[in-house]
Image (cartoon, rainbow over all chains, first blue to last red; front, side, top):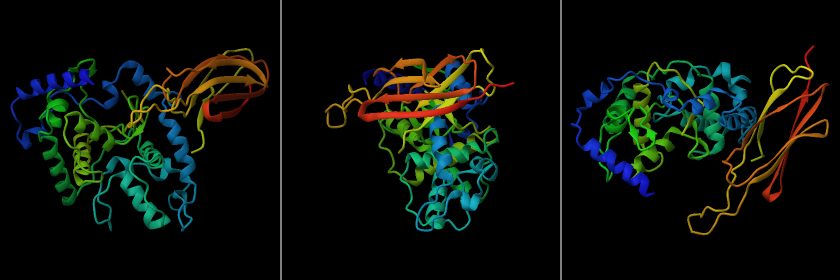
Length: 265
Length: 108
């Protein structure tokens, strides 16, 4: 796509002229007021996200509501067996604190990872592959239970270490374009990349229905698109770098309302 | 995965008053013009026809074409004088045939 290439080269030239930031400065690098993901959308997309009857993510939600009560695996247990028939009540606030390090887990997990852990431990079912429609739907179902609640990152020194790694990656130049996340999403946020507005990079709307994908997608899929966009080699699927970035983005968004299911261009 | 469709009706319907119906079909709407990773064309797979019927009588219809994005969304207005049923039906390539039935219950 020569258009995109030219646009990114312009962005690279713009970013090259910016002074490098120390990691401490990056944490405070957003002097502009924080904008929620939906606030940076066009009015048409805002309406599409706001209105449940227009938001296509509800197709996945309808599937997930059925999957919630559907027994799976040799244990023949459903999500509803343990968590009750009303995820909107029993799961309220869960999505707002993930990624987290659940007790007894050998590693930190994002919400999708936590669902897979539940599948393996309690349903004795095989984990769903990343970006599987059912996994996305269940993640979204739990995320909608936290709709409007402020993002509250999980505390603890282990999570602090992960967030620190994420903050470092956020400021690390990547790829042939030699751009870090912070160059676009902190320093150039609100400006234009050709016809598109550069957003502040808020994670509160994910899993989101992205028009470019014509499907529901995870935050990690979006991050992967950004990493290949600066022409870097993405980390392998499931690498801790993705989770560290997710944890850091949750810290960046702390206090902002969960808005899943988002609609993104 | 089974075909999924959403049908939204206003919470209250009144006799003779127009009401808006919003329907979304979960469908890839593959155009037939896109190549796959080997360079050969992906076969066309689209929904071609939508019909809304009140008690079996055609009330609204639309033909769908490859330029329509995935998960086609349609909004249209209907009017009815009595209680009945609304059938929303889609047809398309590869034998797609899906029906969603909703009761139309007038208030008051």
